[in-house]
Every structure is written in C-alpha cells, then in structure tokens.
Image 1 (cartoon, chains in turn blue, purple):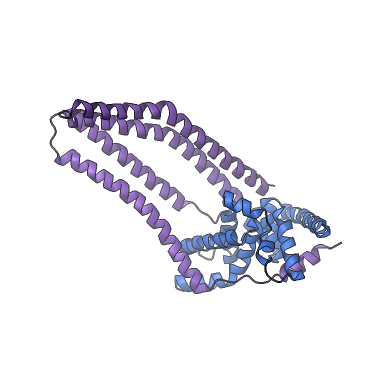
Image 2: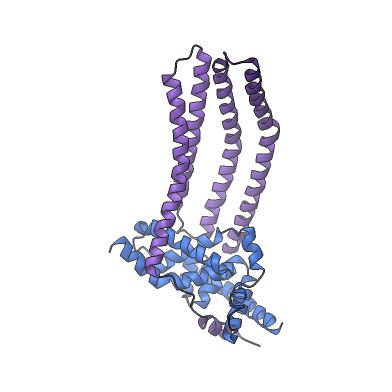
Length: 164
Length: 197
C-alpha cells in the first residue's frame, strides 16, 4: 500500500479518538488541533518504521500520548484555559443542555492529573483495557486499580461541579 | 447524583468537531514537515555560508603575519564546531523513538535535556571565547594601518565583549538555562512518576 493511502486510512480510522485525547489533555480546542496535527505529522514521518508489529491504533496512541506529555502550554494558552474552552466557544451559540454537560465533563477532566486525563479519555472512548495498558506502559493489574480510582474521582468532580 | 454511566453517555453524545478532511490533513502534515526542515536548513545554511567566507579569507587572502592565520583558523574551527553540534542535535532528535512507552520516553527526554544543558553550558562559553580570540588575532594585522581612533574603537569593543561575556552573560545565561532545564526536568520527572505505578 502506498504511504499516502496508508496515511489516509490511518487518519480516517483514528483522528476522532486522537482529537478526543488531545482535547481531554489540553481542554483547549486550538491546542488540541495543534497536538493532533503534530501527532499525525509524527505518524507520517514514522509510517515507514511501522511494520505491523502491533496494532496500528496502539502505535498511534503512543505517539499521541508522548506528544501530549511533552506539550508545554504557552502563557497565552494558560490564560485562555481559565475559561472552559467549550463554554467559551459555545457562548454565542444556543446553549443546549447537551453542550453544557459536555463542557462540564471537559472541565472535570481538566482537574485530573495528566496521566489520569489520558487514561480516562481512552476509557471513555471504550478502548480495551489491555490496549490502554500497552499504550501507557502500565501493567494491566495496576491499570485496573488506577482506572477504578479515576472513575470515582471524575464522578465526584462531575457531581460537585454540576451542583454549583 | 450521576454515576459513571451517565458521564459515559455524555461523552459519547458529544457533538463531533469539524473534522479535518483527509486530504487537508495530508496537505498540512506535508507542509508542517517541510516548514520544520526549512527552518533548520536555513540555520545550517547560514552557518555554512559563514564557514565558507572564513575559509575563503583563510586560503585566498594573503596576510603577512602568521598570527592572522592562527586567528582565522580558530574562527573556522569554532564555526565548524557549531555546525557539527547543530547537525548532532538534529540527528538525536530525529532518531528519538516516539512510539515507546510514555515512562521510557519521558526518561529519554529527561536524560537528553540534562546532557544538553551540561554540554551547552560548557560549550557556549568555549564558543564565545574561541570566536573572540580568533577575531582579536585576526584584527591585529587587519587593523595595522587603521587610524588610532579606529584601533581604539575596535579593541575597546572586543575587550568589552570579552568582559561582558566573562562576568555578565555567562552567569546570566547559565542561570537562565539551569532554571529552564530544572523546570523541564521536574515536570518530566513528575509525569514519569505518574506512569510508573
């Protein structure tokens, strides 16, 4: 398969989930787009090295996770983060209840630790646990414990902010 | 009181973002890569042009004193050293495997940052000193026929530059670099800790 064809296939199959991961990590639409673009740039650069040694989605997720972890927020971005991005974005639009709930969920995710944000977005996107363990490099047993804690933490945060 | 199932349903019902088309993504990716390479390429080209200039002066200009040749030779070697460092850095970054696990990746990054800080801290000082020495030696003959005022201006500037580098810039740059590196290393260490449990 030609490189371009393979890239297109890979992009179509994974871009939505990778965007979710980047958005969950940064809580910022522009930053998430930048990170997604950077991820796929690295995918393109490394595509020749990929020899089906693992599932391609695992491989791409690892690139995305490492890209997110090494992302440094600029001061401009940090200031912007003060406002929950989705809220800011939809301010002028009609405020549907669904949008509000999604914005609230992203706000809660932004309160988690970096690794927790990454893991929970993968859980929410229904990635199988062994794959999450493979991507994050955390043993499956430890990961299950960690996921249990993150779920609890996120649910508490969600209920707390919903009441406010 | 909402449970995790509710959160899951909120997540899955989130509106799809304006998805970038595949062709647009491919265009952006290719543009991004060429932009990155171009920036680096211009840096290397600029240094190579300076190197060629110095080599031309060294080999095709006739000077009376061997001191001038020593000065030019030092300048050429210093620029060459800088170009080698640029290429070395580029190769290390290119070779880094981004598909390894986050813990390992962060560890690699941390080591790279530490080594780079150590190397550049020492190297920067050497670079400035070598370049200044080379230029001072070069100026001795070049300024032989210059007016006294011209000589005073050039030598004062060169000596001031030496002094500024030695007593002001060096400490300042080292302090700033060290603070920046410490922040990055702390951050990488903290993140690595999150993946090692």
